[in-house]
Image 1 (cartoon, rainbow, N blue to C red):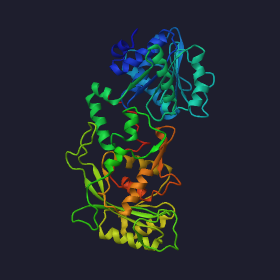
Image 2 (cartoon, rainbow, N blue to C red):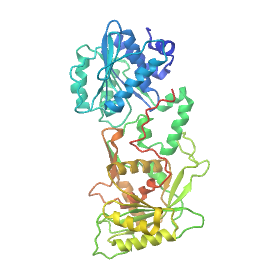
Image 3 (tube, rainbow, N blue to C red):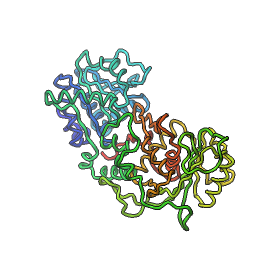
Image 4 (cartoon, rainbow, N blue to C red):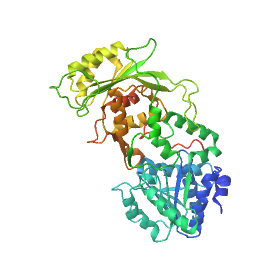
Length: 483
């Protein structure tokens, strides 16, 4: 019982791996020595962070069962996050010879005179009066409110100089976890005591080849520079506000195939339509070569749907992209100031001429009527897409996945104003991030910097069926099946 490694292997019969034992033993030394250190532990997703935390808690409760003491663990929400931590702690003891913990009121578990309490750090949640004299933990610390943590939770450890640990993954530089890590790294530089533990996916893969294959598959689907790969597996911070497409991503988006003015036998096509937000009905209706650059335009992007050929590399050691769909831009049309009856006729003609399998159309606001009319003419091939905060965030994550993995490509440069407009919008596009991975992606061309009609039209390829692409909000998986 004196070493958490022995406790893990011999008592719990769930041996921790070396990358888990390193932070666990450092935290244990601080607790037992009364050092009151603060630690930050970042592990790639599904690498066993929650398992490490639960085993450490189980070990400390057994050590302090006679002496007494309390552990406090805070999570961004009680359901599901704090409750999941409580259930995991109970589960690690389930297969051991140790007796089960005693459940108390308000998310509290006891082992003799020692106890652990699980709290929500959400605004409005009650945490008054709790004291941590063994350990204070912050789970998913990249999502914890820094002000709430400092005001309500840090004082819980101050009275007894309890050890503190923040568990989480990377997001942006202004999160509680990122701020804490910067301070701890300064302390490390002064005294040489390791307080920050980072475990990217490559380190986990050395212990679990199956995990390595899993992450390589994610990189193949999403691209190595996708924000989710960078934060959740490479543990890299993102800029809170930055260009949406890096130079490396833009290079992957540039294809070598030709622009085409008519369909090829046997090819499969889709039409992607972003509808102008406000129509100038006094303007001359019809197709313009690139719009006037000042008013919203309706843009239709014609893509060919292909299966990625065998042996297509995913880059950065990822597995092949074979079998995943890719989208090649074959043509692009822009209307500025066109009335809806003109657009209805033009889009219907395009859809029939190219025999498109799908027509995805912006059905938000003024686009709703046009989408309905196209649906009446073309039937179930028409897929209305309604833009909202959540749906646009999902679309952005998915489009980035396609671009970062080389599965969306524009046609070869042809000097056309339509193509120049698209790439101008790509270069101008920016993103901002919410306060945590669950908060979503806000993206587009900033107001005053131009329009993003051509970009939005292209991005609608990510709304085509059978994408099987994870979104930013839903991609986080708590299962740790690779342990």
